[in-house]
Image 1 (spheres, rainbow, N blue to C red):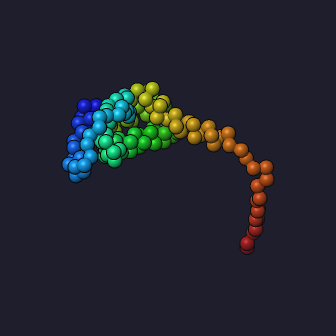
Image 2: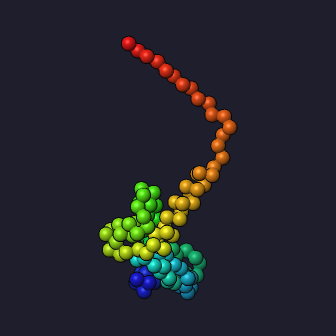
Length: 134
């Protein structure tokens, strides 16, 4: 998977450089993402002027965010980490470990804790209307 991602980025950069003949390739930057239940490490192709941004990275980022959202929703619905991993196995064909699921739902836990610990107003205006119509 890592080799395929790197190859796609190199091919994207070659196409970009063909359209920009005054620019040249300028090595690689280290990068990583989560996929297939583990951390994928690869080299991100770059150009001399910093104008090249691989599209494959945007796709991977969107998939990672979608997985995190899905894991958070399933976890908040009461599924255990193991059950969330089983759902991911059915959807993506790859079983995610409890550690991977835990990493994915950590964002949800953080947001829920921030909400629970938020300050509350001392005074809330309230209007109570009661009526009977016969």
